Image (cartoon, rainbow, N blue to C red; front, side):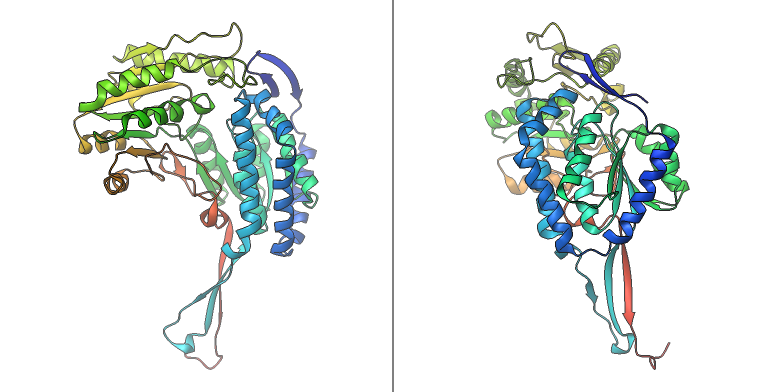
Length: 463
């Protein structure tokens, strides 16, 4: 695979990076293992110092890091700064909380003769992180902050179109004081990725990406009997009940679908609106989308960025064409579009019936699907009629009702009166074809540790 920086705003190729050699892969694994043997013995206080340093550096140099995000994947500069700050917050969260999250747990025993039992949480070894391009810093911070804090070491395979962001994370951790080899970015080919997974010193694999990539990597990890976590695609439902505050709900809908140019696994992709307010919602939503502005992502007045690549544009257009061919109606919002760059005008899809393949696809870009439903039960039915189970939203003035509906939605996350959000102190993950495992907070840090039982028993105790 070719690792290259192509500016999505100009479609200009700026820099190409060579694939890693086999020697570089072997050296990275050797150093990662050597680093693990000492890093696992370091105190939580020492690890916390490194994590806090990483947070401080990101905040100190937020403009330069953020410009790199905009350069390589085209996101709005304001969104890039928000991502950099979020990444810093994740490092800081584990600097403050990792030790408490992994404190040994004393177990109650029915009979004192059973001994003094406890569970200790110990690191496993080297982990392989395979990460996507849509949040080049956040996705990496989400895995390395908790796992380095737990005492593991990590080899990174980042997306091929954000190689400079990957290198920047490597440089960040070195500057933060992480021991040599404890985190290393590589530019491997597919054969080398398989070699890394199969290496006995590699004890786990964390992937965020597409279903296809997840299935391939998970199968290889399974053959090697390695623990893995999979954070895959999503088609989040955005349920609007008849008692919702429509003005505020529509604003959240426009934001929830179009931030990061709609290239978000937890974007509000399927808007499910109760019949009595559907027409008003559609009119207001159309008006809100029409106010978006395409343009230079470094321009603070731009509100809709280009997609990550021209290939992404072409693929999304073909998806829309297939949906229309299968009976859907597509309304393109006629925004002024720059003459160059990987731009895609927003599209609203309606009349998507249950036989349309679009019903069960993920549109990774500014394409919204709207569904008219009879009532709350019908809304839940449509929300759950998806192969994905990542996030979702319910909008209603009755918060208790919102919670009841949220419990009926088969996803890993549901928000009431807000699109699915990502924060340093909230867990992230899904079910079904959205993957398995959780990242962030205590759930994330415990994914790749050995939950070891230690039981001290009186030698004269009965068997």
